[in-house]
Image (cartoon, rainbow, N blue to C red; front, side, top):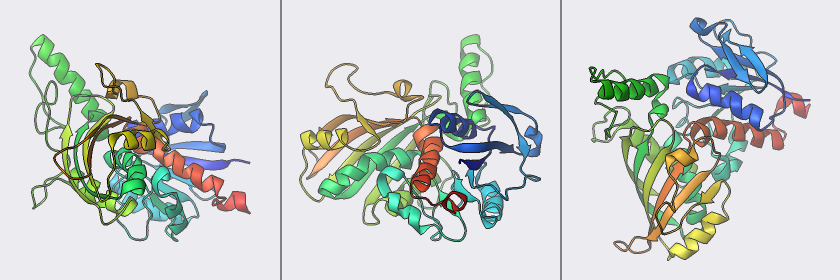
Length: 342
């Protein structure tokens, strides 16, 4: 017997990936419903070899459904996730709406799987920010070995993390440059084509942005509240795939050789690290893959017990849709869905 699953926000980048990954991983589902706003009613989406027609969130009946994968934005989740959870349907939410709520576990299965046992009567589990997800997958095994004290990270985030409209803006601006058209800026505060923008989210009083703040507080909640972290989030003209330059300080000594061995054996990590031209991963190679890739593992000689890494992952997959499905698989394996456990 399989689950009854609703994918909310199914027409977005992440929603479509959720449908793809459910099919690819052959998640046991008796029924999958694609849900979106009323303006998407009837839009056809692919789920494996099936075609699903979008249903309206406002009128959809979630009673009898076991799982809702929510990727419809923070304001929608704030309103709808508690309503859905109250009907006995577990919500795995991809927005920032619930991540720091103390009643809601924030989970990356390779890092803090046991946090799933902390699910409350809200029936909501949160997915971290896409940049945080790949970062903590790489940090966890190293932290277990030598205890991380401080992390300095610069992200190189693809435009897909901001949605379909952002991807379209990169495309239209790129074309405009080649045909000498006007550059139109709507999704980004500066030209994104052939440029980089050191700005993600909204600016806060201390000069950091909300994207940078998310990485700090989410890493602490998922991995260890004692870790100090500072981030600079940069948007780059890449369609899919987030990259991160990560500098780590440890309490205990650790060599690059040890780190490479530890990471090769870590769940969810693939090490591509040859000290030669092309001996590393780039976003292009990571697209469509499940892994968090680690390259450029080396000693940071400027601090005691320091390492530097290059971390890359498909932000629509491990950063969002895949992580949500992995949480569902974790719950399934632990017999946590009511109907199947009955």
